[in-house]
Length: 291
Image (cartoon, rainbow, N blue to C red):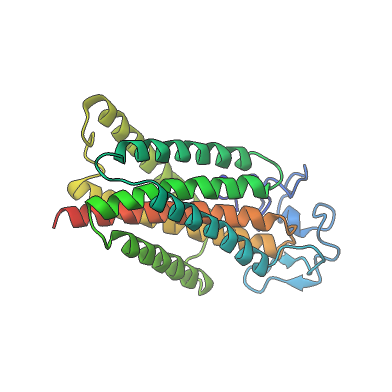
């Protein structure tokens, strides 16, 4: 399964004819997953030793140095902790009162651009670089800290905790739905999410363009009734991306991805959670502003 998340899209976390192995150049073979076959999976010494009871696909046995769920959890905690630390520092060090808000906004935009560059560099590297991932998390945290402080100061003091709780609720809900197979990540699901995400991003870019030309909120996709609708759509898309991320992590563990890939799993999950938090914060801001 090829993920829409750029962090995973170049990796061979795949059960169904993926196109790129873990730093290998093998092509998929018709009728089976190339990473579950001994000739093409360098991490499977006896791939037919076990069977995946859910999919009926050969599963590679555990090996030394393979990624585990504990690795993913610990790396994700470190990465999210860095985001939180950056946000706290920015919140405390960058005031958003009337005299300093423009300066703080400028720093936040600069931090977001740096985070974007670091994310793109890591996304196109063949191997994970923890320094790049943690650098992304730190700068992303600065951006989130300033934005959260602005919302707290000018919109609602309770918006940030509500957005955090909402993000946690979405994460827990999607995880439960995925583990109980209420959500089944297959090609049709992935295609739908990809198409919806492309359409969503194009609309947001058009709205941003009209906003830059005419001022205000452009076409109104980020305020009022349309803003509420698109905020909900953004959160739903984030939840779908979480399901894709869970699928990639599960497949990476199943097919014996190297332990270093857990940094990429943490990176992808962090990107998705940041997306959900921002959409939740925006939605709550609109709802609070309409009160």
